Image (cartoon, rainbow, N blue to C red; front, side, top):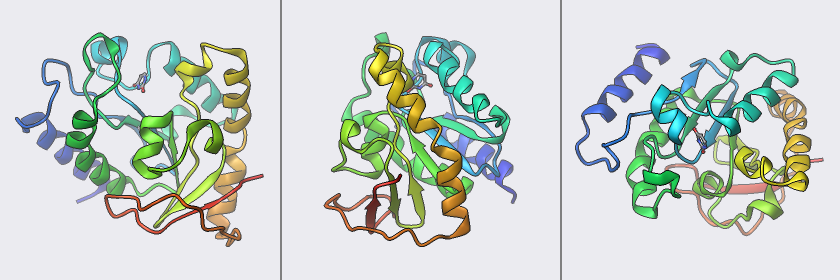
Amino acid sequence: MDKSALLEKLKQEMVTDQGLPLTESNLVFGEGDPDCRVLFIGEAPGFNEDREKRPFVGRAGQLLRRNIRDLGWREEDVYITNIVKRRPPENRDPSPEEIEKYKPYLARQIEILSPEIIVPLGRFSMNYFLPEARITRDQGKLFRAGEYFILPMLHPAAALRGNEVMRLFTETFKKLPAALEKVSRGDSVEVKKEELGVVKNRLEDVQGKLFG
Ligand code: URA
């Protein structure tokens, strides 16, 4: 089965999974190129995403997508999704239980996509890979988690709320092509072990390295 078919099968499994919370909202599975090199992962869909059944289509999404295009990339060439794939009521933060229930599906989605770099947007998504990391301290650093490279970024919604966060968000975004090149050249970045704990869902052996 090719990647598109595997993703479709996974999506259908989610549609019929009665154990998943938030089923009063639409499923927002994710979109983009199944052969993507870069995978962006947000928290959970909001009002606009629920309505359109597409991730990151509101104001924060427009900021994310503009930054992707500003790199000279096409939105269709990356993949965009969320940990929790249905909208929590009133756009509240997803609860630990909701994250826990949706996590196995994200793990399988990542396995199918097998991107070169994963960009968690905001702390919820970052902590999925790097449980001990702190977003303000660790955004913009390139980490290795098992076979994956992780470049955590601030959430674009936070960037919309403050100039300094916007500056950091944009600055980190611009590092993405160089990080991708570094990873795909297989440069063995000297990796410094950090106290980041063990990543679940097969992403073990977390190592971190300051990037740039
Ligand atoms: N915020 C997120 O984390 N995800 C979306 O899809 C939209 C806003």
